[in-house]
Length: 251
Ligand SMILES: [Zn+2]
Ligand SMILES: [Zn+2]
Image (cartoon, rainbow, N blue to C red; front, side, top):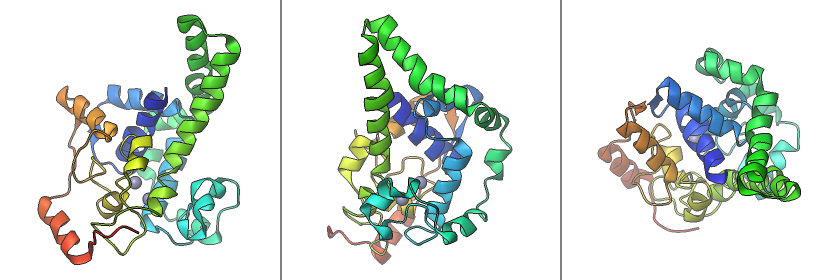
């Protein structure tokens, strides 16, 4: 369930709906929406608005999880406080009409309580009890607390650790950095210096490696025609940026 819900966030909410880095057929959209619901991370509309705002005003007061306000704030503190006035004001200027006009995503948001409750907590708990003979308290502890909270925190390391520690070979002027351990916990989202430089690239990394399970998932569905129009940065544009702004020194 950690991997299922994680891929729902990375391949669905992030790479498909927020960045439109590839296109998906309706069956793949439904599958990704189910997987995203298993993570219970609000609606796609709210997720995408926050993330588009994050990319547009990265590491400023308008960034909803501005790392300039500290590691804890960037990780989870931002969810415990009122939004900064600049984030509120700039958030209203973010265009999410593509998501608001998507009937599937509208249906999901209208029914979010029971869909997320069922996919994230009830069905995974019942599966443990019915299919693996787990005791109720074990199944509830694992699915509703340990798996849910660990997936949640691991995803959030992208906003905290990957904006603070690592290499900046593509653009050394921005905080987002390349972090293998964030990629390990987020199924491939830790190549963050590259991702902020080329957010439209479906790989969210320059090259593929074993930690980037999300890219492998998209490629599997490309092979059966469910994922198509995959966008990538050209070799020249990557090299050009590295020559202008890149630096291989760790911080
Ligand atoms: Zn970021
Ligand atoms: Zn992104």
